[in-house]
Amino acid sequence: MMGKLLRDVAIMGIGQTRFGEMWDLSFRILGIQAGMKAIKDANIESKLIDSLYIGNMSSGLFMDQEHISSMIIEEVGLTEAHVPATRVEAADASGALALRQAIFEIASGQSNVIVVGGAEKMTDVTSDVASDFIMAGADKAWEGLFGASLPSLFALMARKHMHDFGTTREQIASVAVKN
Image (cartoon, rainbow, N blue to C red):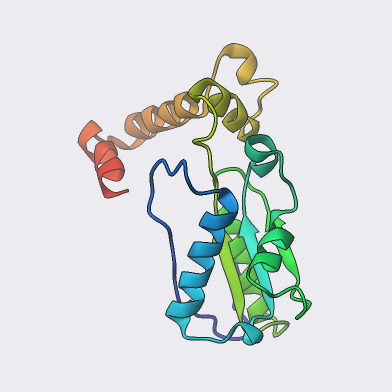
């Protein structure tokens, strides 16, 4: 549970790339495009940015590339400003955790302007390979041993929710439609 923040925090701008299979665009380009759109939407100058957080679960697996936050800082021209860049990982909640860390940093008074992003690029490998990599976000040694995949684990959670709360298939399907 989060207590009272020391000062108000607001999201000033947003940016995203379209969802889909974008074979011609690298992870780096996608991250930069979304970040630059957010900076433009917030109508701020890059020199005001105090920090950067990137939520990412599996760049090391999908791209054989770790330390992506520093790579993005360099690409957007903030290296010389010595802006700290941090990658956070929390499986499918990596982007949300990045936002949480930024909120705490601003609320503490440590920073005023932070760029936060979340990104994955999973379409450059086969579905079987992607499923195996994604299982790294679960207990692969235990759940994977029994043939579980993240979609099957989420399906089990949905079934339990339906059982416990009377949720209907239509209500579950509405989440997919909304997203």
